[in-house]
Image (cartoon, rainbow, N blue to C red; front, side, top):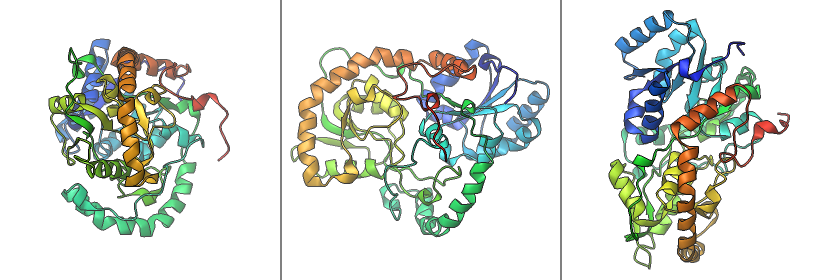
Length: 393
């Protein structure tokens, strides 16, 4: 670790335009940086040669610390030649398991939005709550990538023993000093999540407004390779399909069929639903939608998460769909509707607190405090694993 104190407001933050344009919480975070005095640099993509050239020139003129955030793996790799020469950078990870390990090894700080990345590295968490599906069905989310994933899934299974053996040695190359690992959850802003005045007119008992397909290649050696090209959101898909089978018998249900609606449509349908399907996938991670749903006053139904969001238990009807049949699910759906008023009230009671906890500036201040050794403040974690003794590997 460098002895020089890093001041986030004096850093150069490099982010990807694709994630910035496509993700509301990314915009809230990036837009908060410049008013604080930070320098921001937008990379237009991995083939943005002009942008990469400008960034190389700028970094040669400055010794400022670089923060890499909201970048796809291909964009990180496009920046690797610059950072390999210069170093003096940190990384912020969303889906950490897909990121090139070189950056994790070489970074001053590794900042995780999903706390299981820290838990697993400290030997205090497991990767998933169950085995991945054996094969991937591309017809649940038709795209070129899904068909490639379906074709490559058997190969990933075949080579996973070898890759996992190599990963054992790759893990030894990473400095797992807990002080390197910081937590930086997602931001929300009130304007993105409006509450309508007056009583709500519900159109749906249950809805799925998120994705039901999550397929990745596991680049990080702390993630088991046999999960590559498997649908880690198979629990969301199973719960969605099973509730859908009860359409009109007697429940009303909305399913986005894997499409991403415009933001205003997403907010409207979520607000018109008594419950929304929400899980952290097989990897049990907190996502931005958990926050968005709670702040919109819409309770969730699904499996909770083990490390983050102590508030989530107040806003979630818990069930583990991977251990339920359709016959076992139906009475639970009736029970959920009976509890809806209480859980909605819980969401509304949490809204203002969550908006304060996840205000972009509050989160940036929290991240800065962690860099000087302060713990994550109350409200974000069920347990701070860095504050308890690490189990031997």
